[in-house]
Image 1: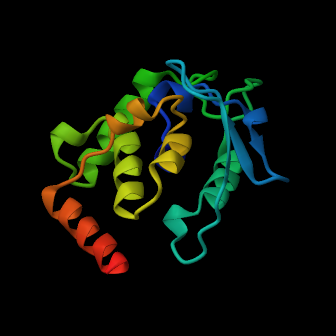
Image 2: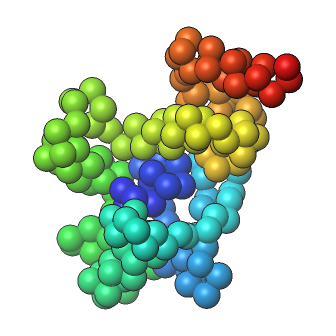
Length: 165
């Protein structure tokens, strides 16, 4: 759940709303119905052979083998059966974050969407692509997630000017 939320910039409710049918194993993709007026997106699921903890294809296969057969069409189900509630996802995320030593102010699932945006920006990904990855209709929404430092801006200016002169 957490890996999908991070790699696809999903809100807690979007993770919990995922259906089994949203995973297309043949195409290797996930269809996401986003909330808050954002775009519905279809994104690639990536196998990451060098880093098993980042391999979402393997993680999904493993989850689908272990997932209780409760008759629900939800991808992620609660211990009692049926769709996992966003508050349950929040509690799971808080527990895992605490165990990982993440500071208490960062122990909420929405930090994953911010992290993806930040990592894409640090990787010099075009903001239009960041917008699409996060499922935003407007670049203005994307800009709320993008935080850069003066040092990053100076480095970008220097690199750009070196290519001009």
